[in-house]
Length: 98
Image 1 (cartoon, helix red, strand yellow):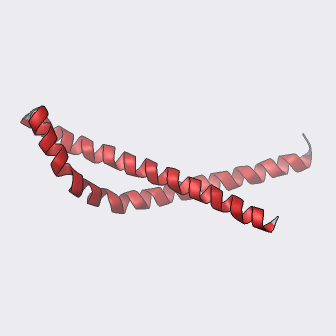
Image 2 (cartoon, rainbow, N blue to C red; image 1 turned 90 degrees about the horizontal axis):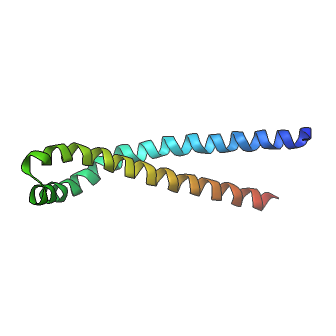
């Protein structure tokens, strides 16, 4: 492998790790602000469903499990969306200048 190819791969690696770090950080911020709102809007239905089809004793376990699952779903969706947006944006900017 030539020196130029190695340098190009290193630059791509730095670019991708930077995108990953930024996407993770931004997804954490999105989750921090969106999770309480989403949990507040959805926990009533989840608790009602749990009480109706399972039991009252199980409902409070689901209250906390739902909080964790919802947080993971928001984080994953925002991370995937932001990563895709950043990669497409980077490619579009690179294509414009090349």
